[in-house]
Image (cartoon, rainbow, N blue to C red):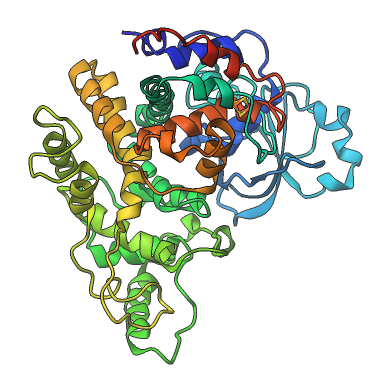
Length: 493
Ligand code: SF4
């Protein structure tokens, strides 16, 4: 069954945004906007990237999208071969010759560019290391265009109700739920496609770890966490056994997250740090070429519970558990067993609660009592995984992973079970994007907004597909017109 042909929202995206359905081809050169999205989300074969001269390159952080004048991305961290990682800017063009043609070579704003990213090779146009995207994407250009919504765009979100607010208000409640759910399923399929693309080169388990690490990186540290996950095959050789304490030392050491100084005031943290350093000293030279620079991490505004030291400690427990994937499979089977799939499991708990139980680490001598290596002992132990993160992991990683595998195996029953669980999952934490989206699309109408994570995901997808392609005045947005077409009858999903 073709997902796109049965999902109304997927057809809307094609009609309104001009994006191809999965499997269609795109003949013309891609718009630079699409290439910028590809770079931002690193939809590349990251484990085998090479420059036009054939030398290897690793992107430790893609940098921050610059919407002002100057290079496209600022503050990227890139490692050329085995050289130390460098921090600098990224410029994206269609061809190497545009470096001169666009005057970048004469513009002082571009002096910090360390990598020229182009769509396809051409006449040598710049003296910079050059990376060609055309043959290094992790999926077809048509699939990526479909996921990012054609050319992609960005706009400053307004604080006023949008033009879709009125037609959405006219929708019967069940129609609104249908619409949000269909948009959410488009989002699920997109995330699954990304994991499937990674599984093609690294295997499903590696795709899972990379997704989990990314999610544990939250907004600030997605890229260094992903990089550590990509290094796992080198840190934990296939079939080999690495004791959890040793793996923790490797991840923290390679990640550049081990403090160089003891606190000299807090006994337990200092003792733990000494113990980890004792392990890491012995292996430091062996893994030196993989080491991440310390400044690739972002700590500003980070809550102690989300500190990467603590998150890596949690991941170490998961990786060290040989039954981890089997435990997830058992959880999924239990959560989808019976008639009311997803609402409650056979254990009588909701799926978020049972997933938290499956992922929780019972106890860690140090990390249950300390937020970081600098923290004093807490008065009572804190779980390594909080309830609020479970919905994030489920919606963004675990369910897309199971869905992607089901589609790859042509297992329609399993895919349907994932979708039912996905659509019934209780709502996760609110955030500023969701609040603004509710204000624009629903005039803040929290009463009409279903309390499910799928509704949240659907809203985020609409923002991505429509709001981000328009402006504060909703200029040119086709969403209101499409919503008006729903009434009186909406085709079944
Ligand atoms: S840009 Fe489109 S989807 Fe977004 S608020 Fe305006 S009308 Fe609604």
